[in-house]
Structure formats: structure tokens, C-alpha cells
Amino acid sequence: MAKLENGYLKIANEIVDFLCRYRIPGEEMLCLWVIIRKTYGWNKKADYISLTQFEQLTELKRANVIRALKSLQSKNIVTSIKSDTRGINKYLFNKDYSKWTASIKKDTTSINTDNKVVSKAIPTKDNIQKTYISQKNFEAFWINYPKKRNKATALKVFKKINPDNTLLQIILKKVNEAKQTEQWKQKLGQFIPYPATWLNAQGWLDEYQVLDEQEYEVL
View 1 (cartoon, rainbow, N blue to C red):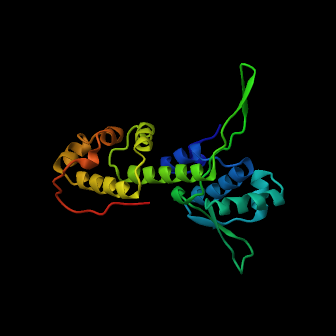
View 2: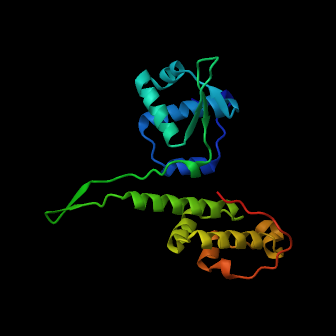
View 3: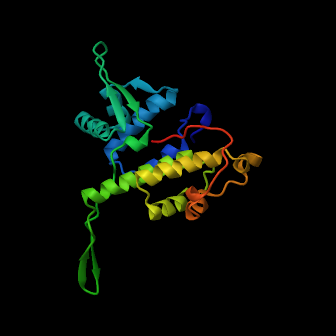
């Protein structure tokens, strides 16, 4: 039985949540776990990892390891730094998942309904890009909103609003203003509305009496 005393990884829940919905092929995921294990597992941001180590830990062939690592780098999930002296690359996991390449599953499965074959629509490049931008904009809102509750519900409301860049900036500015009000600061944020509630009520249209200024974070 595995025990925490023998070591454990410390990964932000936000990253794990994103990995739950980001599709990574099997061999790439195996290599990614090696990088996370060799870095986060030793409280490091980056580390030198030989291809031999990848082979031993994943039980993949070297050619498969090389292909998987190249794919992870092309998606901006992993950064590789070549070493002229050691001959071994240094690998870094990119925790800023907003910079990862969008990953949307293409489904070409056909459904037989009443003896009629209906093909599922295949996402177009434009749709994939729009989905990625929408997700990225939501993450900017989520990072700045102080009460992080019911994220899935908030995401649904946010997608329904589908703000452009101009409206997104207004939303982020208003969230920042609201965070400086006496009401939102009372009792550790007890009176801050849930993010979905604030979005549904179009909280960015409200007027707030700002107590002090503070910059807001944008992805």
C-alpha cells in the first residue's frame, strides 16, 4: 500500500482540474508524469532527465519517448532546454495552462437512429479556436473573482454571456472594484455573491465605491 511518508507530489488543484478535461494521448501522458515526478516530486521547477530514465519509467521504446516529448513541447505543455555540457535535456512543466494548445476531441462516430445513419459534426478549426478563447477568458475571470465556488455553473453562465475582449476588461475591472468595497471585505468575504450569481445579475453594471486601487490579473 502506498504511503504519504514515502513521498508525494504537490500539484495545484486548478492544474489537476484542467488536466481532467484536457485530452493528452497515452504515451504523452506517461512522459508528462515522468517530468512531473522528477520535478514536483523533488520540489524542483525543472530537472535534467535522460531518455533512458523516460524509457525505464514508462517502459516505452526510445522512439516513442522522443515522439511524445516533441508533441508535448509543440503543445506548450513542456519546455525542453538543451545542455551543451551534460548531453541531457532539462525539462520544465508549464503550469500556465492558458498557453497550452487547445485540445478538443474530434468525434466522427455515426449514430444509427430508426435505421438512419446520422454523422456527428466534426469541430472546425474556427470552433476549436473560439472554444479555447472562451475558456481562456473564463479562467481570467475565475482567477480574479475572490469567491471560488461552483466553477462548473459559473462556466456555463460565462459561456452564455460569451463576452468579447472589451466586455471582458469591463468585467475584470468591476470585479476588482467590488473586491475593494466594504461589503465584499466583511467577514472574510461572507457577503460576496457566488460567481454564477454575480454573472447572471450582470454585476459589471453595478456601481461600487472603491476604497483603494489594486491591479487585476489578466491571463
